[in-house]
Image (cartoon, rainbow, N blue to C red; front, top):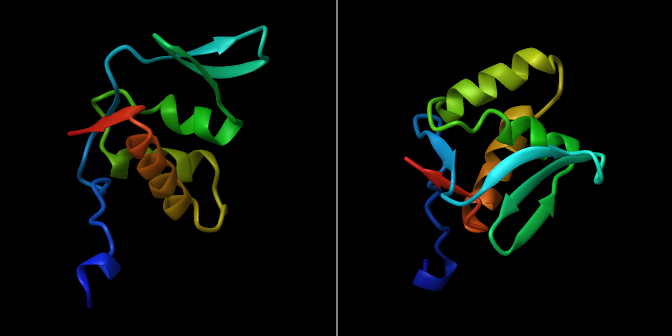
Length: 100
């Protein structure tokens, strides 16, 4: 396999602990009728799924604990663990969260 065809190594694994990046704050915004992620240069309006995940990103819970909590809260949702991991990968790539 050529280097350009190699898959990137995931930084979001079940044993890691995500936290919001410094300067980012999650909050409910009545004017937006939803959760937003605030940062010095602006604001990101989140959908309900993203807000549910980011509400659990506290720098204390591991990815595995976040997945377990959401799986319990939303039982029977097929592929929920993969969806959570995929979102956390995107949030990390967008520099919304840090992975410890």
